[in-house]
Image (cartoon, rainbow, N blue to C red):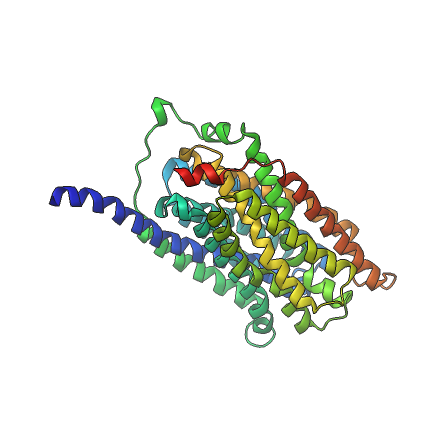
Length: 417
């Protein structure tokens, strides 16, 4: 009886250890999102420190997504091959070094720092999802992934609403980035100590290579659809909110700096509630696609109101609703896991991160060229400029809705297991 009890308890202990490690990874994701969103509230300071224009700062910030998307592929395969114990803390070390380099007042060093931030951050969500897949059952996985994103967007909120006043009264931007780098290193040590060791066996006698998992994931058309949908739904927050949002509301809507930061911070704050809400909805309905369509439709409605009737509701309220509903952007991360074999969980998450943020990397320069570079120019009509920027995101979200219709529902089959 005792031997049988020991057999039962061993997997439970492993699951508990993975769940604790997932908690550390969620903190990593919090810090990663803080580093991603914080530059939006310090563009004038970064422009002065690096000796470039605001458009030049946006170019430096955009480098993040190039390394984030490409390194996501590497992160996924490393997790499947070696586990999370050393892989995820290594990513944290890259993020920490990137934060420290970003404190150096030279544009070339700042660019290198931003590249390293993107590369290291690619291990945050991918690692958290990997650990959640080992620490939680299938029936609660979407909820766990939703809470993971909840932590991330809480970091995004702090990176805007808290960092803005912080750098204008207590610390310099240099001190902020150095402090953030040190905190990331401390959390990395804790995660490494808590994550269980793993033994990875060859699947069905197959000799596995780094490419093998991606052959499985990337030959599945559903993987591409998941990535494109997530990318199109993420873009309004990663580009519209976290890069241009504060300046857009300052220049086009004539908001004060404080009011612009508050309004824009409502988007990531909405994610804090929206991600677990839509994760729970997807689990409760056993319908991933239905929950996704509900969220994307609500996003589109909020974007349409802000674009065509911007004064009908307080902007912060519309942006809060937008942020909550955009929590549905995480559902494709559950779908891609369920649409691919279990032994390529990490690679599936890496693949969707790659596709998602490749969409961001492609749309970012387009928005900057046609909308961003004309913000605040004397010849620009503020109302018309704001309308055009809103119309851009309305088109992006509408396209996401159309592509979502081609997704295959995975919820019912997962619920039956």
